Every structure is written in structure tokens, then in C-alpha cells.
Image (cartoon, rainbow over all chains, first blue to last red; front, top):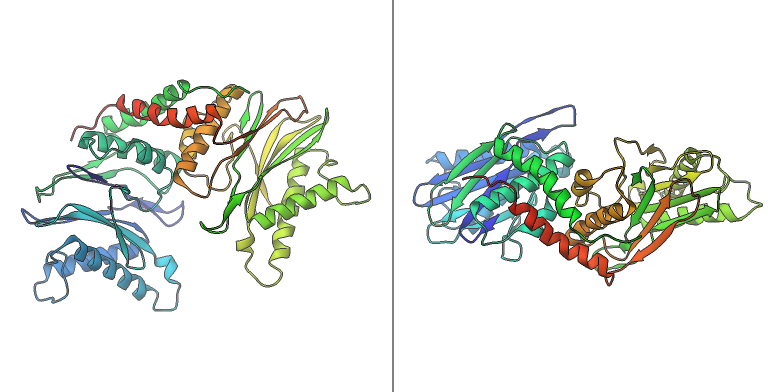
Length: 236
Length: 236
């Protein structure tokens, strides 16, 4: 999510291969050169694909002999998005070489951050390797199980909101999804990036024992019911 | 939706074959023998399939020479669900005879009502012709674009709620979907069936000029924002 004064990222950690086979896996990854660049990638879709993509990006960013483009060398966020898109497309293409459909290996990613000389921004990367950038008209991106949590984002988002309110909004949105769909689950990973700091900012893991999350989760049900009572009734 | 004192049905009327080709079509259909039975069917999915299914059910319910099972003759709601499931499966199978995949002709239906001697109930019919019945654990069914509107149903449903509150809840749920997805749109069709009346009850069409709907739609945004303010903040 893009705010006037920075970026906020949140991801869940639930992965599954069917309801009888699920586990926890981090879906948020950071690349950081203090004072120069801060880049965050979040992933959704086939776990083998996204892990391979992140490993390739990591390897190419630490091996100095490697002449491939590196996520720590690209000059702009746009070039970073191109790099991530190309890497994602490469992994999916390789997985489908044996004649299997590319669809089952599909994955998508959100890439956000800021590089010195540019503004903070976020891209949504498609399995095909192409991507779109965030705009004031579309101030947040979602990937994965997006629908349950969208209505509250549409209603309550405000670019001037504080980081505290933004985190609260994201928790309400994720909580709506968790309550409706087994494929999304706690803990959540959260990162708050303050504009022009080129620092990683706060990175927090929120689990089900977090008392503020518990208060928001149970409080939201009551708050919704009360809000609902205040609406006019449809006389029938 | 099943309540202690009856059933409430709501459907939208948007149909589309791509975003550049959408129109309005009723998706709620009634069969009614005063004092004896009231049956309502709502449909989602391929419009050709659902129209053919409804036409077959209608034809077989008006032609007395026709010896096929009729929706006005079956003795129980369970038999009605079997009939609707078989008819839906038949239409999809016929459409795919020419070798095309059955998937593109897929549709689903919700069948609810009451027949003298039985209780009011609701079934969800799958494209494969099989079906599930509503239970106290799953007191409402959704078909079509279900995800955006589900969280508020999960949170605010109460079997003892009044018809007025149930309609308000359904309007909030549909409104969340309309605001997030072009494939769902006004006007909405609404039916309220009071238990053991075996009468059609109130059938209302709600369009975008409906002042109560407008008040609920705009009021819900404000109510959500206010509810949101009252939640504890996540200190970051």
C-alpha cells in the first residue's frame, strides 16, 4: 500500500498443496543498501516457482563474478520490476519445459521500494513477466486470495492516513480473509518503509498471540455489528 | 438465507460476455401453488444453460400431458433439488455434445422453498447435478461472485434477525460486491418468504434510485470508517 509518507507491506505465511497439506512459509523478502536503496518483494502462487525466483534474485545479487543484472545494481525501480518479471517468467518457462502446462507453475509478485534519485513506488508482476505500477487511482495492490479483503480497503483507504491506521486497515483486511478462507493464515509479516529514509524500517511478525491483533480481530466483529445497527432498515 | 421465521432470497441481474458486452437479466424464478408450495430458484453461470434449465422446468410444470417429473408435483424439497440438479446436468451435457468442454457451459443454482408437510429449506445445486442442503452451521448459500460479500455475512448473520435486518445485511453484502466487481450490478431482486405461509410473500425489485438502498450504500462507507476509528491502533 502506498501512502503519502511511505509504503506499507503485509503478507501472510500460509502455503498449501490441498487442505490436508499446509505449512508456513515466508512470502516477504528484502534487499537493502543503507542510504541507497530498499526493495521488498512479496510473492503469491506456486511456492516452488516463487522460491526459485527469489533464490535466483538473491544469488545474482551476492555473486560479484556473475555478470547477470542484479537487484542491487539496477538504477531504477522500473528496471527492478523488469528484472523480477524476467526472472519470474524464466522460472515458469523452465518448469514447463517438460511439456506440462505453465498454468500450474504460475505465480505473481509485488515489488516495492525506493532507490536514491527516485520516488517510492510499487509494481505488480504477472506470471507472464509484464507488470503494472501503482497510481493514485490504484493506491494498493493485492495478490493471491484478494477478494474477501478488498471491500474494506476500497472503503477505508486514505493516502494521508498514518502508518498506525494503515497497519490497522491491513490487519482488518487480512482478518476478513482469514475468517473466510483456509488458504490464508497467520502469522503475518509486516514492513513499514518511511519515504526517503532508504532504511529497511520496521519489520514485524504478527502472530495469533499478538494482543493488538486479537483486539482488532474480535473488536471488528462487534464494530461491524454496531455500524450495521445504525444503517436505515429496509421496510418489507 | 435461512432465518428462524423464514427464507430471504436476493439476486442481482447483471450478465456479461466480457466487459464490453453486459446486460440485465432476471436470475430469480418462482413456482407457487397457494397454500401448498412455494419454490424459488436463483441461478449463476452460463446464461444459455440457466435459461434452458428454467425453461425446461417451466415447460414440464405447465404441460399436463408431459409425464416427466414436474416441479409442481414432487412431494418434497429434496425431490425438487434432485429434479433441478438432473435438469441442470442434462442441459450442460447437451451443450457439450459437440465435443466442447462442459466447463464453459457450467452453471449453478440455489433452490429454496417449502412444501406442505415439510420445513422451509434451501439447496445449492452444483453443475454436476449433485447438491448440498443448508444447515444451522451454514445458514446461507451464495453462488456466482461470492467472495467480496462473504465477510459481512459471516460476521453479522443471526438466525433470529428480523426480515428487515436480513434484507439490510444482504444489501450491504451485495453492495460490497458491486463496488469491487463489474460482473455484479443493480437492480437486485428480493423475495421474502414467511415460514408456513405457502404464499409467495413479498417480491421486490431494488434499483439504483431506491432511496433506502442509496442510504445503506453511502451510509455503510461512513459507518465502516467510524467503526474502524474505534478499533485499537497497532503502534509501530
